[in-house]
Amino acid sequence: MRLPVLLRLRQRARRGQAMVLSALCFLILALMVTLSFNLSHALRQKMSLQQHSDAMAYSMAVLEARALNYYAVGNRAIAGSYVAMNSLHAYMTAISVTGAMMRAARNNFYQIALMELIECFACYPPCVEHCEHAAEAVQIAGEFSDEGSEYDKQSRGVEPTFRTAMEGLDLMVDNLHIAQREVHDKTLQSVKDGRSNGLDQLTEYNAPGATYLAQDVGGINANEFNCAVDGMECQGSVASSATEARARVMTEVANASRSGWPATRAMPSGGGMGVQIPAHLHSDFMQKFQDIPDDGNYQVLRHVGTAKTVQDKGSVNGPGKQGGNEGLTIAASEEGAITHQWKHGVGISTYKAEIWSDENGGGHTPDDAHDGEHQFEGVNARALTACSQSGNCFMKFRANPSEARDWGQPRVYSYVTRRFRGGNPNQTPWELNSSATVSFEHGEQGTGRLTLAADEGMAVSKALVYYHRFGEGGWQEAPNLFAPYWRAKLHPFRDGDEAGRVLEAAGNSDAAELARTPGVSL
Image 1 (cartoon, rainbow, N blue to C red):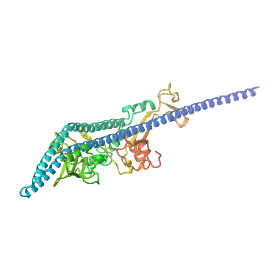
Image 2 (spheres, rainbow, N blue to C red):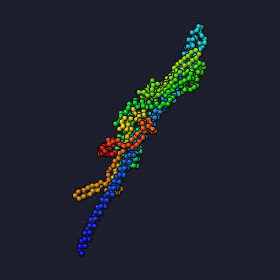
Image 3 (spheres, one colour):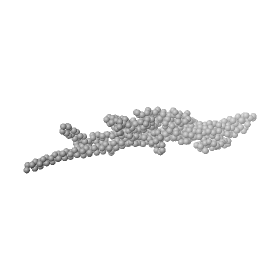
Image 4 (cartoon, one colour):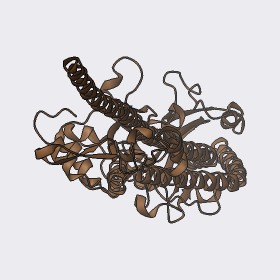
């Protein structure tokens, strides 16, 4: 009877060992489930943080692209202002030349009067007919002189409006650039701190609890953005061009943008005596050259005019694209020659009208047709850093010949961190305790410590602001700030050194060293 009892006792002992093993398995299973929950939570947090970093880099790049497009539209408006100034000067010379043409006709009849007078005394006794013609020619010359004075008076009546328009256009250029600088400053602040002008909402929405942009990484962004604008302080790119070179760019754009009439006013070719007349002058005005003498014929032999942005008024008839043209003056000129054939004489005289505006108040000829000064500050008259309140300035793209610098197109970086561990087991029970660690003993092998949750994660991203015009061959057009075709995209790091530079700026030297390790995927 004792043997079966012993067997039953041994079986019960074995059953107790199975329970211990089962309990140990359940503990291991619980730890594995906890680790699984923790891993999935960490992966979700990491993906969320990386998506937030990507969104941050892309959003800052979009702000920069919009700013550059704003500069392009503003630059076009500034160039348009100079074109309008050219047109104003062209109109004023066209008005002013009317009096000069009348005085040229007066001179013609003084010449004719002298010829008739010579013929008068060439005879003995004097030829009465020629003497009468000489007196009549002097009278006609007086009528042309009076008519010229009347047209001068009308020109002076228009000049106050001309000056007001010039002042308004000059002020508009100032205000356009002030707006450009305000956009630049606000955009610069946004890419420096990653939270200004609404960017903080990205963090609140995408990754609550994540840090804002690392300060030194924001400094890299600010430098990249400044490097895209010639004349702004910049490290690591090409030096700023001279003020004269920047001014010449806008000067040439403004001159190239003129319409045909202010650029070239020329008399149509062909025709005979009395047929050719400047097309932009009113036919009633031109008819007076025929009606005042009431006899004979007249002809405009040559009539040309132009208006452009130049270095000085003496360059108005030179090429618009030329070295040293800083655009200090808006000038216009209109000139020609007129001949009259009347009775027994012929007279030919030249005429010319000029008007220019510069920082010294400009000038004009003929003087009788004008009254007062007209100021013009000059294209890009001041350095960009001293042009926030006044001075005709504009934003010029700073190109870089290096492919490694993406040809000067600005790059934007994001570096953010976020604490992955909640620290409160009531909210994140898979962490087990506030330290998210488990300590255990394993016999002779000693104690161990298992961390169940990563304490902090980080994410780094890069975006590129690039220029691309629509249409076929759009990639072939060089980046510039005169066409609003700037865009933004997420962009891979060029190499480990670029990523390492950003990580070092963020203070993560371990990650920087890892990024520079050959074979490590970025």
